[in-house]
Every structure is written in structure tokens, then in C-alpha cells.
Image 1 (cartoon, one colour):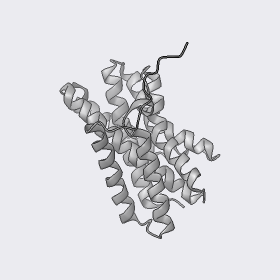
Image 2 (cartoon, helix red, strand yellow):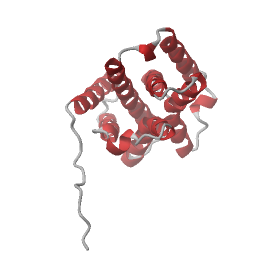
Image 3 (cartoon, helix red, strand yellow):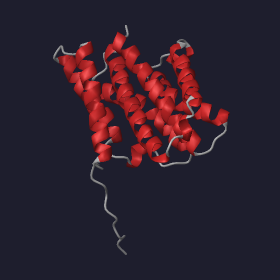
Image 4 (spheres, one colour):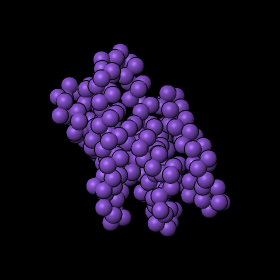
Length: 210
């Protein structure tokens, strides 16, 4: 049984990743069909990979909610000519939208994992795949280095949120209120990490020995 907040977070993540796909498609000067395809795969890619991992029929094949959310979001973005806004503003909007999608999908993926009684590792894997799968597909389609390979705390946030949600459940605190608190915490963490340029340690360049 899926929790009400799962559905809310799932649709919030879907709309947010739709915006991020739309903005990247517009930046790359794709045509209308190209933008629609990119936004669609960004929004549903992670969820489809997750569902395949747990041998479920992908939600988008049986629920019209995600598709309605995607196309309503695209229609609104097109009507307000979002892609014509100032470049700096669009970059900030992309980061915010992508961050919302990341955190919302990580929580949604973790919640699904816990309804299947998976252990902590399983919860982290489903949360991670749900959160980063769509962005990974998006970046590969436009020939960019995926965020997950270089961006500050990107995948780390998804895993941390999943771990916190798992232990909230162990403590009996996995209520709707605590779930939304975790969502806000994860979003703030992701945005602060980006704007303060925080990152995990990187491997320094090393000159090969001869």
C-alpha cells in the first residue's frame, strides 16, 4: 500500500524533473519533439529502472498521473515561454528543479523499498536509482557528463535521505509530518552544497610512474 505522501512526492519529483529536462532541451536548441522526449525520459527514467529492479510493472504503464503531470508541466512552461528567461535565472531554476526532483524521488524510492520490507541496502539502492536515474538518462542523451559523476553531493543526498528515512521508520517516526521535514532538510542540504560548492574529496591528478 502506497502512502499519500508517496504519491505527492512522486508527482512533485515528476514535475520538477520535467522542468529540468525541458530547460536542458531548450538550452541545447532541440525541436519540440526532442524537448518532449528529453523531459519525459528525465521524469520517468528513474522510476522505470526502479520498478524493473523489483520486478514490478512500471507505474507509468498503469497510472495516468505521471503523464498528466508531465504534459501539464510542459504546457505551462511553453505558455509562459520559460526558455526565454534570462540565462542566469534559468540556471538557478534548473538547479532548484533538479534538486527538488532528486530529493522527492529519493524519498519516494525509499518509501517503496520499505513497503517491500527491503533492508537498509535495498532502501538506499532503490532511493538512489529512483533519484538519479532520470537525470543520468537526460545527461547521457545530450552528451553531457552526468551530474552523479561530478556534481557536489548529488548522489550523496539521495543516499543520506534514504538512510534517515529508514531509521525514522525504525523509530516509528515515519509519519507524513516527518517525511516532509526530511524533504525540506534534503532540499536545503542539496542547495547549500551547490551554492557553497561543497563536494566529496576528489582523487588528485597523479603522474603515472614509469
